[in-house]
Length: 100
Image (cartoon, rainbow, N blue to C red; front, side):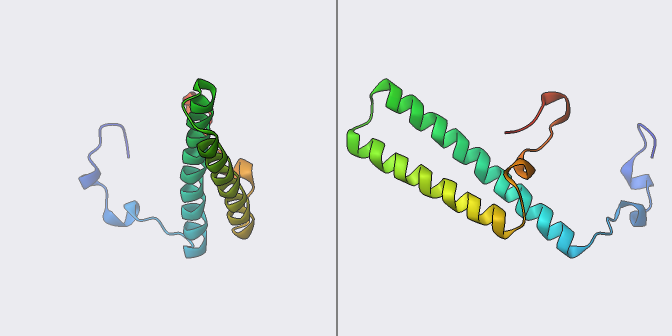
């Protein structure tokens, strides 16, 4: 397909992606875990900012710490279960760099 060529002009059989269902499932799990890891890191950064600002009680700091530690442990379990390494969750965004 050349630049500017309409997708409607491309035969439907060329647009199909023949892929192994297990490979598709593995990549979907990888994508979902990447999004969860991104959200986990964002939550951790926000919690640290709030702790540094002093806007949380000692009990809140304790709960947030325990929650983040549990989430980190669960992510480690899930990546191991699906045969992924933490670096597998770091998507390459081309000129923007890596996601995580």
